[in-house]
Image (cartoon, rainbow, N blue to C red):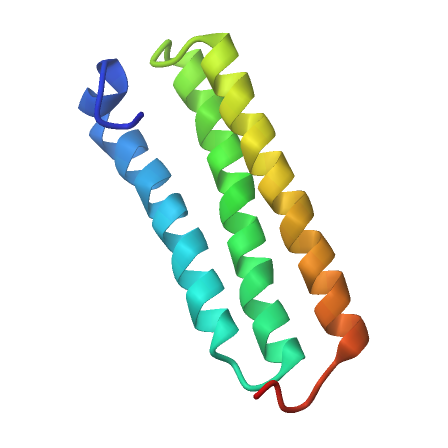
Length: 102
C-alpha cells in the first residue's frame, strides 16, 4: 500500500508506516526469544504501540487524501484486531508468568 499512489511520494509518512510494520514484526520476534513470559510481554507492549501508530498514520494518510476513507478504515480495523490479539497474549503471559520459557 505504501508503494503506490500519492502515499508513495509522501516519503516521511510512507517511511513511518513502513517502520511501524517493521517494528511490530521485530518486537514479536525478539520478544519470543526472551527467556521469561514477562520478558516476552514487554516486547508485545511495544508491538502493540506500533499498531496504535499505524492507526494514527492512517488517519493522517486519509486527511492528506493518500487513501480513501474505506481503505483507511479497513487498515485501522486490522490494526485494532492485531492490537486485541496482542493484548490477549500479553494477559495470558502475565498470568502464566513462567520464569523459564524453554
